[in-house]
View 1 (tube, chains in turn blue, purple):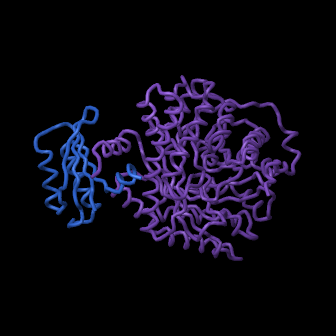
View 2: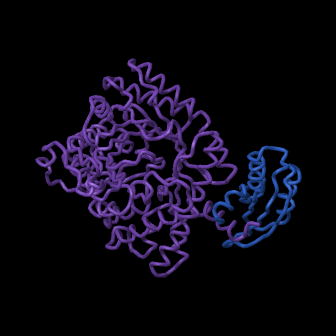
Length: 89
Length: 452
């Protein structure tokens, strides 16, 4: 199973490093990273494999969300099913 | 791999456009809770609901977090209480409502619906007592919602019930007068009521339903509104296509949540309700969608046509996205719950008469409309009769949720807070329909009910 982590906010040094560190700590394997611009925001999208997570997925969501709050970023972690069901028939 | 554009679109729907799941509603049959001892029955009901729905809130919160889609309300709907009440007194029924309210508090859900009766053709003794108890029951509870079905295309209109509703609504308003008449916001009168509707105040668990089911209501007027804005000055075919595509995506969310909730709670999936349900929040308004289509203000000539297009396109897009569609499924136009509707009424652009016309092409009906407190029972009953006739004649659901705001006149306002919002008090005709309403009896079913 995969999850999609999106980070939206003002650009600053080390965003990818911080998110990657959390992924590594909880054994979420990064399979893809890209970045784009949504309106005036900087947006990073990271797809991670969550089969080997060492904590429940909901706790992982909380950790990343808190990381975002500490750094003034909007970090959302959503299960890939959301995107699959919305955009694929 | 998931496309970046698709990911950003979904995030933007949730973050900027208020996409949410309005409600996950668990329907529970109470038919096995009946007892000749009303206290025992109330205890049975409390036990059954708190046991069946024990995990509803935690599971919904878990899904909300994992999928990143807000689930605004968790609700329970039950068998119409008049069907299990038997020979209870009014007092017994009120205690029953309190048991439902206690169950709702224990579970931490937002509303519990089903305190009602189906009287489209006539009353049982239980129906009469339950209906008489509705104003007190609503005044003495916080989360209990009530509905009465007074007509159907097959049965015609029970005008005795319609006449009764005017009195019930006035009494409910009076008993909750210190709280902006909130009792009336929790009570709705129906024609052709659906038995699997997850939306309040009209949700109940029909007799044709399974023991326990999960029904989901989606939302997302803001998403449709933004899509129309992006589509720009396109023609109507393109406009309809844009709405269909958006509705498909919104409904897929509902289907996903419904399927997951059903799986995790081990309760069968019932339906997804495709209704576009507004909230008072900015950017979550059905009226704004109609304005985005090109009307200066909702209520202008053209509003009914715009709403008809919207309603049809939402259904066409949604129906393919879900395996089972049901409930009300259409666009809601509750005045107090929709910032655009409130503005339109305040600007004098939208009248009750126009709203009535709009209900002919969408679900559900005259919803969350405040009228002056001195509006007579007869006028309210006649307003209900008009609206219900639209449903009966057009083989569709219609409903009335009207608030005669005690002590207030046109131009004042009432405020209920939360999803129920705030409503400007609207002008209503005071010409007397008393003789018409006092006739009693039934209006026969329309000729097109004879389909067999």
